[in-house]
Length: 368
Ligand SMILES: Cc1ncc(COP(=O)(O)O)c(C=O)c1O
Image (cartoon, rainbow, N blue to C red; front, side):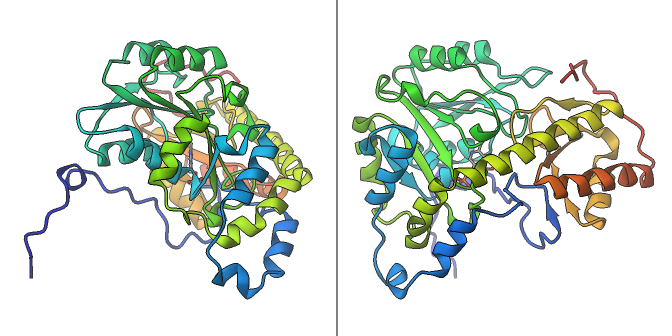
């Protein structure tokens, strides 16, 4: 029976976000996860856990101290979160109210818009140009006195494009009334970090995740770095137990195994060059990437290509509905063997759908 209970208007009008989960069997090159695995030291720690890890409420502070040491900042400047998703949610809850504006450059990661809209604030989206480069000047022009949150992924998802530190700092300084999140989820694979600016700029926040290079997407572990004073506000909103005890217990092992990360990152970068070379040789338009994936244009063959790859046991991601990405598919890079498999299957898949390279509907650079 309907009780007449209604969700807030901002929630009722929110569009549903359904990542295509379910039945993700095969080589998962669709979610930018680390499909190689994770550090064996993390697995060892997992196996040595006792009931106490589970029956005790988790303590976040030792984890924040470890991450702070690793990043070279103070523990008061780190808030561990349930993935970067929660960091974005907390920023939106802390700084936005109805009438405020959040500013994003699209295409980009979907959760910035969703969490901002859920507060009742408006979202202003600045479209990246035809080359899908970071639209720094247009973003600066879109800042208003109502702008209270700006989110920039650097490198960006799904384009792999980067913003320069100068561009980002100009934005941070042009909007002192706004929390500016630089989301460095893919920073292991390219781009320059703004971490050194933390402490000096009150409205700057940086997020890092353990879901990508560390291979721990299932842990849901992220870190938000910012000024100690601003993070105090965010801690008021966050659950004291937002990060689970299993993830916290494994954190030190993940941070300590730098060798695992550098070996995996090196394989991704090698694979990225090979995939980009493949696209160049086939005249398939793509966007040079600084992340662990590459976005390419398959035009009218997009759907058939995606299902042909699925038939061959490789999942790739349809980005057709992202603004400016009609006809585009994003492929994540894995380890060396996985890239070899991808590059074996790709030409066969294209041949079996009778693919002919498609020109972009608008002129764009395809140079690496
Ligand atoms: C730019 C960006 N930020 C954050 C995330 C999510 O990170 P987490 O798994 O830590 O919530 C993603 C995931 O795809 C992403 O692309």
